[in-house]
Image (tube, rainbow, N blue to C red; front, side, top):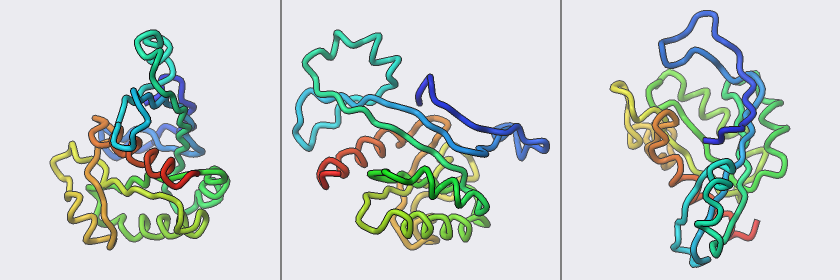
Length: 178
């Protein structure tokens, strides 16, 4: 989502499929700009990268700007320390669960609980059942049932639901004054 994001990834020696050829081994760090015509809590506004914003800055001269820092971490259990470190100072969480891998739900639940333990229950958290663009997608309702919490449909590949989730989370963060 950010043209200048930092991604620390490793090429997979045995690619799982043509979609997954790398894996995050450290963290991802990106910045987005959220701009709104007014500060009404119902105003969604527009979300874009800093590069996009700079090229269209004049179009949004009178709008309200909020910079958003996105930090991503690997989901494997052994990356627990990485998640703990990058969670420091976080105001909200978008938690992606693989919406196609029923066998990975237990790992996702462990990481979700670890996240809640590290950040506390008062921090806004949105869960996305990722990969809704695939034929083997289980569905957000099924993922919600498996994890016992509300999950929203989304796709990191097509960005379906992701921008909406970031804007919704940003509104929750602002509402709670974080």
